[in-house]
Length: 92
Image (cartoon, rainbow, N blue to C red; front, side, top):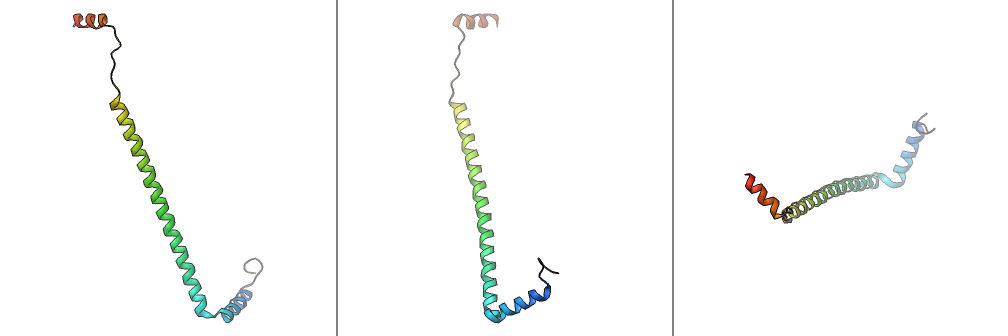
């Protein structure tokens, strides 16, 4: 028994019939086209992953820049009354 109840001999007979119908040249071209399609798909997947990583990195950098800008834009406000500030100066 082979694949799913099909023996090796039955697979060889089917392969022989396919070769007789299509010929080896068409099968070779079909294999080449299929291989090229798989290669293109893999390449597109790698490019997509790289683009996604770059986008995430850029967004993180932009957020860090905004946080630094907001931190530097904030003004320090002294909320102590002047009398307390004067008392602290006298103690020093």
